[in-house]
Image 1 (cartoon, helix red, strand yellow):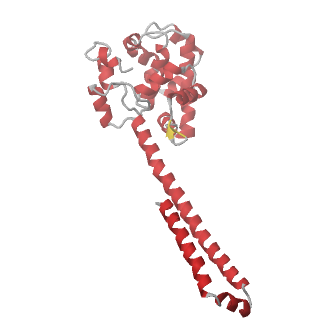
Image 2: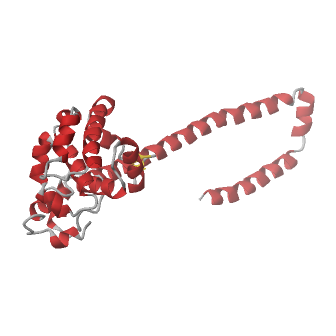
Image 3: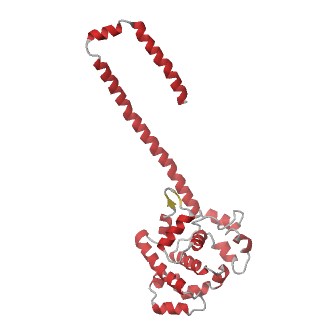
Length: 259
């Protein structure tokens, strides 16, 4: 949505959101829940419509306090569906209540919504891609399709792309270390550790192999056995020198290959 940088600055509705919120890291549970509900309600509508109704959403959903919304019953559902200050859509209202209950569960499983997001930033040692985030959100929350999930994550810096690099807001966000950048750094930090572990394993293997060769040579020498055959082998020094010379010559090409 970097095209947002073309229209939002100095706009009476979009300006402040673009400059101070969109793409900025957030940790507070109510802030994360608000962003999720606003993105869900934006489906099929313009973002400007949602921003104009933002205060109405805050009043209707008790300041986006998760425990309050999670406890809503039929009376609160009917109240929300009659509130002209928000989007009166039954599926979206039910999703808000259901997702608040899901976030309560994330406290027990991960310590909270923000911690759950942090725990899923990497997948197989790499930053989680958008398609994998979408699958995760569909499995976890209600009414979170591809565009809703993408905008939610991008608006909170879990995915890049909120602003152009030349945008002043991008520069401010960069100083805060957006979550997508932290994920890349975490993934990069894991790679040297893996290489080091492999190198250590190879060295350990080499160390074990060396004694085995020594033992074999010792056994071979012992198998020579009686002194008499040993004297016969020593009787022709010229012959014994030639094989040694051949081995030395053959060893040189091997050294070149290693280089």
